Length: 336
Image (tube, rainbow, N blue to C red; front, side, top):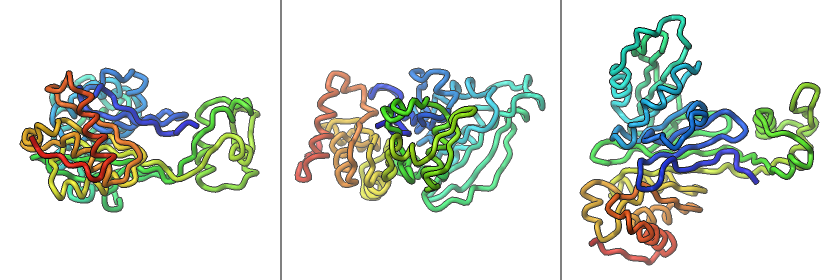
């Protein structure tokens, strides 16, 4: 069975952090963080509609320029969420280039940036290619607390953490999971394609079985047949991304709440416990602390990343410390 939203780390765990969330059977993707995008293909970057950036340290934001270069001639918006002050940072990046070749006849590409602070979006602005990326202020969206994106099929939540500066982490929550069972498609001789998005939408809306789903010109299939042979419906998956935070009580509480019940938790695990004092000085998590958060949040699977380069020859030790703390509620770690 194929999950319709598939998440993968963009880079190896010792390289820049970032998560690529691919919407299968549609031309869409999301990014959690905007570090080095080198491993992503041009086609993958062109599918990105929404980007959620934790903070503006270089390893989380250096990929902005590559994304901009690819999306510049794509109509429509790319939406970017970041912490307080992030609109000015995007404005500064755009201000570093000359845009004299853009005018009112250029492709209507837009960058919409919003800032999340406390428990809500507090500011929003737009930069249009046709206006040489001049800043336009917009009203913040009317979203429930903690939400930074809300759509029919899923939402994205954010929480703010202390990393010496405000740093955000994120979680995607599907409302209802409608997954495609590929052998069922094969049995019915149905192709993979954008038509599946409309079919999934109809299933989520609980339309009648006799509803006709358009596959191609002159080709329709009843929704009930898809329900029986192709779709597997259940609770929506939750994908959480926790990065760059000090292990302190309020951060820990917020991290557990954001990740609670996640099917997949991608979590920074930068330091071994023997270097806990160093981790705390830099306001990062140790692998053991990451495992504790994963266990307290009751996640199904914890995937560590954002490893410090000092452990390049000791990667398995980082993974082992996380797994020990994740699996064993009585495991204790004395900081080195």
